[in-house]
Length: 154
Image (cartoon, rainbow, N blue to C red; front, side, top):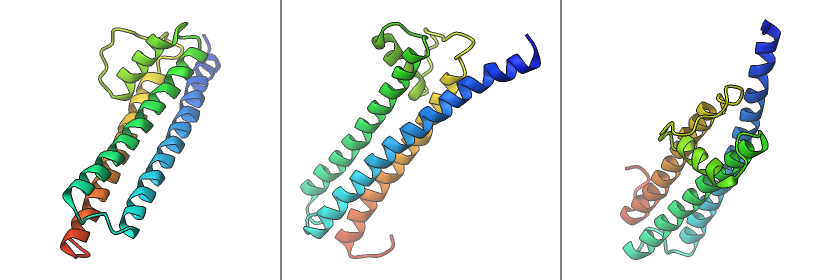
């Protein structure tokens, strides 16, 4: 194998991984905007930060939207694994994707050397997007605290 073969062998998984990451970031951006609109509508209707029960429902809904986005993103990665020929059936691809995306890393399924780089790329993607979900949920709760206590800063 020549140096140029190594570059080509590395370039394809990096390109596929980068395109998949871009797709999952877009999905998460849509979910985040949905959460922002949910909270904004609740504020305009005067129900955010007023009653504990309403806040629980709103935070739970925001968390469910974020979780749904993560699930869709793991599915996208699983489809990529199938399209790359690493899995024949979708179920094991989704399992492997979930293990990578959550950085659980059982290691019971290992992809071929050619596509193995997709694993750490998916793990980095999952960490980034879980961090984004944490930040948005924190911001939602912070909004409710500010409204309830009539403060601009905590």
